[in-house]
Amino acid sequence: MGQFQLYFQLGLQHILDLKGFDHILFVVALCAIYVTRDWKKILILVTAFTVGHSITLALATLKLVNVNSDWIEFLIPVTIAVTAVSNIFSPKPSSGRGIQINYVFALFFGLIHGLGFSNYLRSLLGKEASIFQPLLAFNIGLEVGQLVIVAISVIISGLLVGIVGVNRKDWALVVSSVILGMAVMMMIDTKFW
Image (cartoon, rainbow, N blue to C red; front, side, top):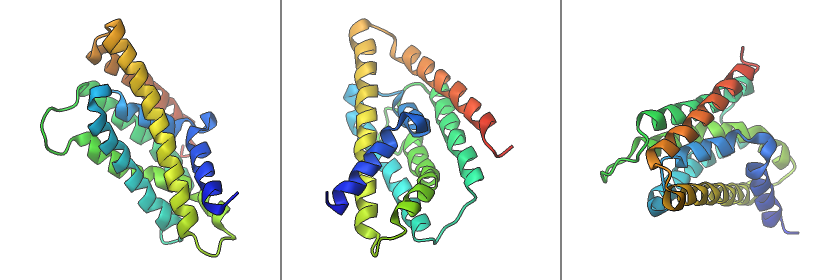
């Protein structure tokens, strides 16, 4: 197995690992207010998030940034909670062409989530002569994993809203409220306290 494929699979498995479901919750929270026809907005969200976590993942892996992992483990559920609260107060995406607040959340919060991945990736890359290709492959694996999560989320939303007739706003509120509750529990459980 080539190096690129190995790190791609590690990134994919890392994001889809149900034991570390915080990332899955964040991606679902980002997408909760969208339906299938919003695919362009969803793609921008996922890309903004990937850009954010790729930047800090690279900086942390290169040891240019070092943040206490207890802080990061606390801030990750905070990002999930803030996104869920934003959805609760604004359960539909804005119809304007400007930059939506969720895009900013995705980019900024991606920076925090990237720091969460950095210790894991740094331990994997410790023996590599060059980290560019493994880092790229890992990030592409993460992106593909996120797209899998987005696809599942949007399909479920599409089925319930489009076919079953669940109100789109109600669906966004329920999903966001459940995610908010889980995020609060995660914040309480962190070592930060």
